[in-house]
Image (cartoon, rainbow, N blue to C red; front, side):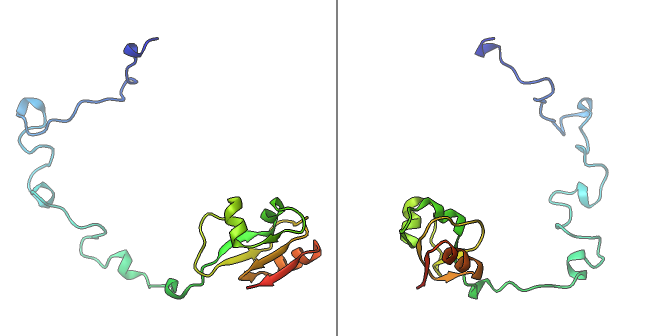
Length: 148
């Protein structure tokens, strides 16, 4: 098989529907729009979610919830299992995590250490916030926790 022998699969390419090109085309006169009415007119139709004049679903259902993103405290999160890449006795902070490529983007409120996984190295971890399980796992491994 050569590149000049390649062709699309059967039925993958269809010819364009040429509407309004005479009665013999089968799509002349009304150009597949039917007879009269809102949908036959130029620019006709209704806006999205219009339900024929009845109260739309979006207005019938109550508004629920509130997400206060404006005042949210967004942290860069790292699990204790990810800290096993460091050598024993190392001091780990946001700068070291960025250098190792564990953290790609530093969030406004700094670093938060989460407690997922197991830690086998003795580390000094410096962060803005820790979960209780993270503190427990770091101390069980013989490390220390420093809150910035």
